[in-house]
Length: 189
Image (cartoon, rainbow, N blue to C red; front, side, top):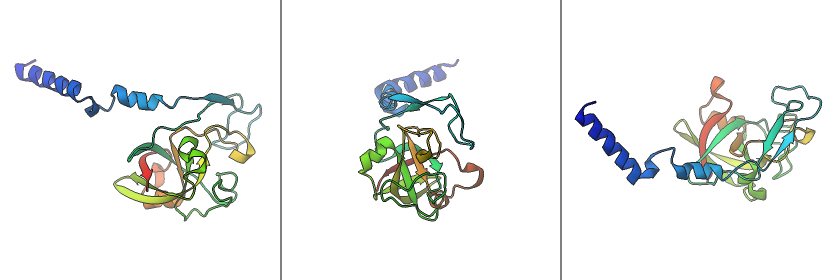
């Protein structure tokens, strides 16, 4: 290795030691993620309900009482939810007791972010693919309960979910094979 290469490596190391926030894998970042650990578990039913996303018999699912801290650019995973009656969202939305059309930009937040309904009816800003959209919080993506009829027989949500209507996906220009578990950032509007 040349002297210039060794000098560049030493300088890079010095910069990262002096400014640890420049490294995405810092101990501080790991501590933030570690703050929200599973609070328990839920076992799937002894007999299965037939659907692609349903709880599997005998499978154990983690539950969470928390979500990562909300910042000006909170990292999350966006999933697709059908908020219409008969859709995969299960019961009517918790905030208003109503079903919502998929043409409405609405979301359900993981339990910790839902914060006992304190974000009900409020707008959040979702960012992805260089685009931004405002969406109204109408429900929680329950991280404590699941595998039953009120939860459409689905497992509890992970602690970092923004479960969005098709209108949100369309506004962000996310279509086709990209729809699924999609990395986004969000903040309170």
